[in-house]
Image 1 (spheres, rainbow, N blue to C red):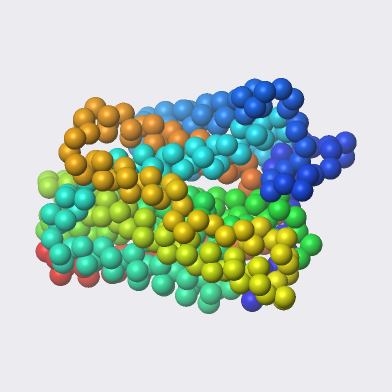
Image 2: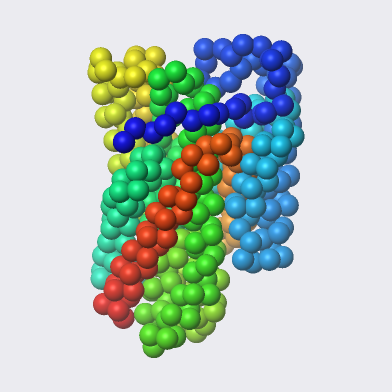
Length: 387
C-alpha cells in the first residue's frame, strides 16, 4: 500500500516567505549564515551538545530517564514551536549525520569479541536467532499494519538489535526517497520523523521491561544464568539491560550485559545487508522508467557497499578485542558516545513534524508492542535452552 504524501514544513519553522528559494542541492536552502564554514556550523552544533549535556545529566540523576529520548523530545518541541532560527541548520545537519556516526563507532569500543565467544555456541545461536526472527517479524507485522516500509524497518532494527543506536545506524544507511511532487528536504524530514518515532518507542518499551522482566523471571523461577540471558536477549538498550540486570542481582548482571553486547555486534552485518538492498534499489530506481522521481531521485545515487561508519565500528571492535586499549580510554569513550548520540537525537528531533506523526497514528505502537513480545518470547526460549 503506497504511503500517503505527508504534509511537511521546513526543519526550522521560523522561516518566512522571504527565505531564499531552495537550491538544487540535497538539503536546504540558501545560506542563512554568512562567514566561514566553522562559524556557520558552530551555533547548531553547540546547541546540540548543550542539550545533550543536559539530557545526559538528567540520565545520571534519574537512571530510568533516557538521554536519547529526552534530547529528541526537546528537539521536536523546539522545532514545532518555531523556536529554532535558520542559522542553526548547518550545525544541526552536522550533528544529525557525522556526529551520530561517531557515536556509533565509539559504541564498538565497548565490545570485545572474545567476551561474546565465551558465552558458548548455543548462546551465540540464540543471539543470531533473536536478531533474525525479530527483524523478520517486525517487517511482517509492519506490512500487516500497512505501515510505511521504512518505519517498519527502523522499529524492527531498534527492537531486535540495540535500541536507539540501531535505529540511528539503519536511518543513516537509508536513502530518503522522494515521492511524486516531493522535494529532497521533505523526503529527509519524513525519514527523520520516522527515526524519531522508532527511537521514542524503543526507549518507552525498553524502560517498561526494566521492572517487568525481573518480576516475570522470579515468577517463572528462573535461575541466575537463565534470567541474565533472558534480560540481555530481550531488552532493547544496553543501559536498560544494566538496570534490569541490577534488579535481578547476583551474577545475572554480567551475563545480561555480555548477551546484550552480542546483539550489538550484529549491528554490522545487518547494516551491511541493508546497504546492499539500498544499492540494489538505487540501481532499480535509476533504470526503471516507472520510477516516480525518475533519474533525479536521490535514490539514483548508489550508496557504498559497506558504509564507512560500519567499517569504523568493526575496526573499533577489533581494537577493543586486542586487549591493548587502556581501560581508561574505554571508560572515557562511554560518556562521549552517549553525548554524541544524544546530540544527534536532538538534531534529528528538530526534523520531527507533528503532522507526520498523526498520519500513522497508533500503528507504530502496535508494531512495537508485538515485536517486543516476539523478541521476549524467543529470548526466554533461548535462555531456557542455554541455561
